[in-house]
Image (cartoon, rainbow, N blue to C red; front, side, top):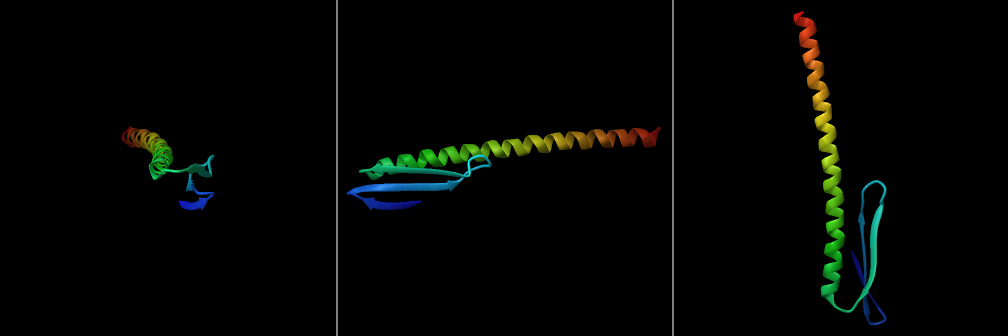
Length: 83
């Protein structure tokens, strides 16, 4: 986060890494009150957290699918060996 002064107003530039399609999530906002800056930063951080949670959920779903395939393969191997 980089805060600068410009024409008597605070210029907030907030950049953070996003997921795949959205490389950078940047917001440039002119504000007079620090409360507005805090609100803007929180909103941006919430968006990033949601993206991270969605990505984590996708990884968990893929892991569950892989685990299911492994279980099926183990059952098939056991059946073949026993028979």
